[in-house]
Length: 507
Image (tube, rainbow, N blue to C red; front, side):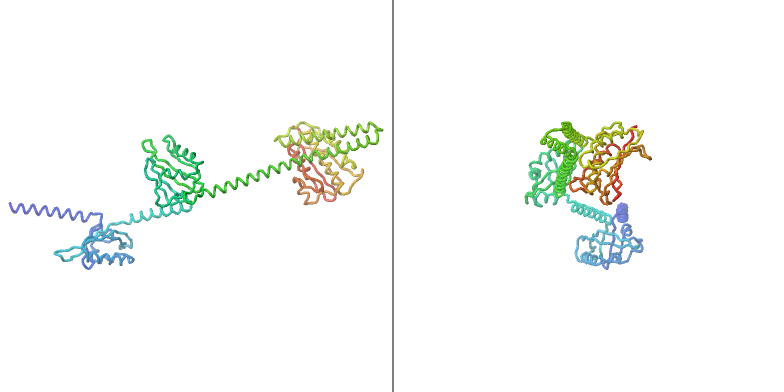
């Protein structure tokens, strides 16, 4: 019986030893036993894998041989502490395997003693390379996030909406004027918002925490810094999270957009000033255009009126002349009214009303309006085009252009000192050869345009006359283009100016 009991006890001990060996060999942690001199006496499979060398070749090698040079001093300090002081000692070092691969391990060691005598050191190695890399990656991402935050000026907030803490980063506190460790409530945050903007902010928040919405929060408002009293324009963006149909948390960012907002306001102010200037210029140009259109007929009205007054003062001996003078004044006054009405109508509508016209007839009627004033001393020669198809245009606008061009020709020749009935202005109508349009040409005997003046002739308010306002040719071109045609000039310096315009034939 005694032998059987001893045998059973031995079996139990062997099984326990085998389990210990299995645990030792298969453990994910590297186990080593080092001699007092630092030589490897025992190593399990995980320890051999960490050192990247077969277990058989590791035995009786110095452990320090596998420590990277940069960590040797740390290892020697750690080793001396393990030899001199009982208890567990912990640290981190980098090991270098046989193939040169480096592994970061966490060390734990304790002295092995027998009857008070130091026999060696038991060493545990845990591979923390992946953990270190993950921590490094996390730190890198955190550094990048902080860099991005600093570059963008973003402040972060994390609010527990059911009464939890309001986590605010340094930038948020800086904008609001809160000190770094000051406890903050939601009331404190709202109280710093400009009174005129609180309703808008709270409306945006109510929309975001509504479970039927998408949980997105966006608001713009002014914040009065609690330290400096300065007003900051802020844009807030956030996302609300729900649990069981209830808003529980909101995370988001705030950005100080004061400079951007002030820049927008300055740009808007400049734009408003430019719009005002543009309106003033339009008003000025419109007034100048009106003056240009009624100047010629009013001049004729004045001339006819002076003639009639002179006849009345001298005694009326020829009533028919007085009648003609008064009729001329009436006609020119009516012409001024028509011109003004037509110009205003042209300025206020986007489309021109056209009709089928006999261009020969329209030009002939226009030339009857040029007999007085600056053209009274010249001969206007009109060359009609026989069997010319009708054109599609606005009668009054075409006549206005003809009168403008003829008067310009007369004034140019007067300015150059060219006068006399023998001086001719040729007005010709003919079909164009290459396109289905009719052409009207006005050719004078004046000095023509020099090259520079020809380039600017159609520019509004450019004039070569001492008393001109520079709108005649610009208005004429606009009228012809509104009728589907073109107006251009042949400068011919020293040989007279030739201006031409085209109009489309009626379909």
